[in-house]
Image (cartoon, rainbow, N blue to C red):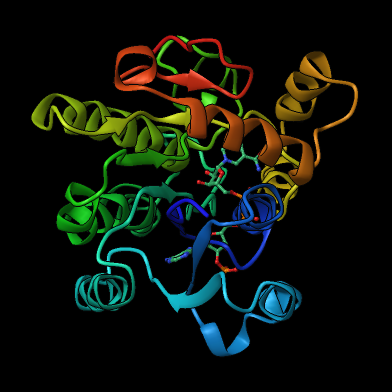
Length: 257
Ligand SMILES: NC(=O)c1ccc[n+]([C@@H]2O[C@H](COP(=O)([O-])OP(=O)(O)OC[C@H]3O[C@@H](n4cnc5c(N)ncnc54)[C@H](OP(=O)(O)O)[C@@H]3O)[C@@H](O)[C@H]2O)c1
């Protein structure tokens, strides 16, 4: 059997992260997955996977921007595998639908902390482990809501804390590409996915515009399973030449920054 591919997926307690972990384990029978969650003792959603794939999954603590905790996770992975091949920085928040005029400082800071600083701290703590991989990939999950010329910025959907920090995430991710010529790194937009995050975003958008935009894009919001299949294929087949520093959409096309 060939050498296992070692993945780390953050925010895997539910939603897209859980779907990504599930699909990696189902698709790659020699992959090992570190499933990052805030509280491993309460990650009941991952119990079935732990039972089914007991020798190929470790549910690990990974809280966004927790420097010491991320370093400790790096040490744990170092001890067990000596490297990590693919890091999917999926953990993210959308907790506020406020417009620019209303958004609170606390909300802006919280979104920046999780969506941007969290990804930077994760990259820092996985840096030496990625360097030991023969095919290192670091893929932050972004959003079309970050597009500077996109619908989220042009219509009164609110969500400045989310959109602005995902745009900052894109900037940071592109910067990582140019600072490090050995790694495959790009922001990846999943499009709308039927998760808690989307449901909250739609419910909190009092203008109703977000629902209209989603309806215009798709008759059925894609399931976590469907999107996970597309994202893992894209990630597994990505190269530095093709995807490096590109803003990649779930359908494989490029999104404008
Ligand atoms: N759903 C969509 O339509 C959509 C569209 C575009 C982009 N995205 C992006 O896709 C990614 C996954 O979103 P989702 O839809 O699956 O959202 P979700 O259902 O709200 O799940 C978010 C995940 O992130 C984790 N998380 C939140 N704050 C964290 C923190 N401080 N530290 C560590 N983990 C934290 C959550 O952990 P707990 O379970 O412990 O709360 C949860 O596992 C996000 O980056 C999101 O921006 C989603």
